[in-house]
Amino acid sequence: RRARRRRLPLTAIFFGVTLLAAVGIGLYFANQTGVFKSATELDTAPPEAPPTVDGDDFTPDDTASPPKQGEQDQARDWINVFSPGDPTQVNAPSDAKADVIQDESGSFLRIRSGASGSAISFDVGQGVLEKLAGKHATFDIIARSEEGQETQISVDCNFGELGDCGRKRYAVGRERNEYLFDVRFPDKHPGAAGTIAINSDFDKQGKSVDIYEIRVSVVP
Image (cartoon, rainbow, N blue to C red; front, side, top):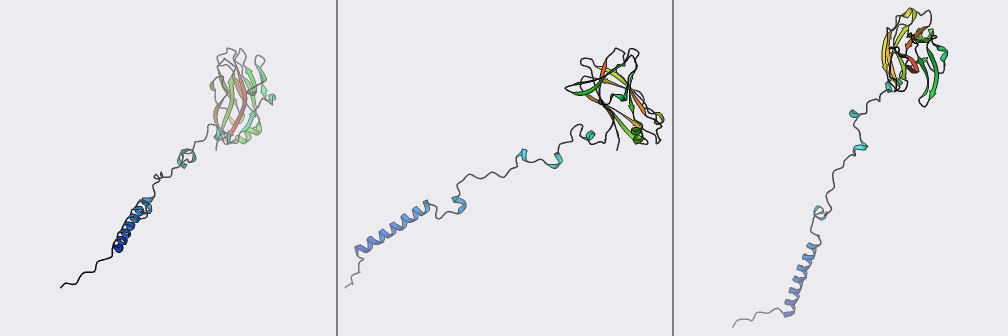
């Protein structure tokens, strides 16, 4: 006669099924809430763009802006030869005119050569020539023509023992501009002052020109 197997009580079976169900539900919710996900998987934010430098905040050294026009000239050691504040340095022949005038552009000397083509001369002091002896110098005439009358001027120089500059001719328009010429001076002692002579109208039509300044500097 076989021995009867002992059956598990119904309560134990119910408890086991309930426990398994609870564990299954717990695992399901844990998976849904990300308990088993890595930090990378949990980061759902959009990827960050790589850092950039705004074009207005950075300028490479090799693209630095070049010097503005005139900056190098301003750095020169200019010596004043003529300014409208001292018209005693000017000599005008009887048939020529030279008048100091001031407008919104500043003060200038308006010169007009005579019918004979006579030039107006500007003194270059002996002290100035002494500084230029034996050196290479640049002269700068700052001028413009009278309104509506473009003209052609001629420039001559007499520096005594230091020679001259040859005759220069420039077309001068209404806009204020700089008219430059170079002179290489011999290494001599100037015995007197010199002159720069300007004919305001090479064609002898009575046109005038406004002279704002005449200056000179030694070329480095």
